[in-house]
View (cartoon, rainbow, N blue to C red):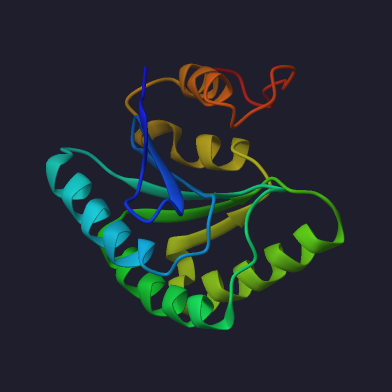
Length: 160
């Protein structure tokens, strides 16, 4: 079972599930970014296969300050050169979540190009990368559910 750790600033929870480097933003401290860059590099070097960075934004995700947004743009450029693909999963609902998805989609398109995707759930990611993952999508979905990333009653849209 994967373990979750928190960066030194307390702003992000990091969990590695198969080839998914999951980052759940729980604070808005820009000092988390240099830590994440170094950590992603180390994990990517240690892995024999692909690595997918997956940022998860839920209803509790903190609002980013303009200063943090500027740093995120610079960091995003570095990140897309380290990992195979960046996925930004916005699970929050409503107008605010729609605005966040739009902003992140613009960032992904401008900075990440074909190397970044914004989505509302994990199914798109699991379907697109199924052949590159070490486990079946159903097994990864089960781990994501046990970690709280998917609701208990979530019905998979793709066959495991």
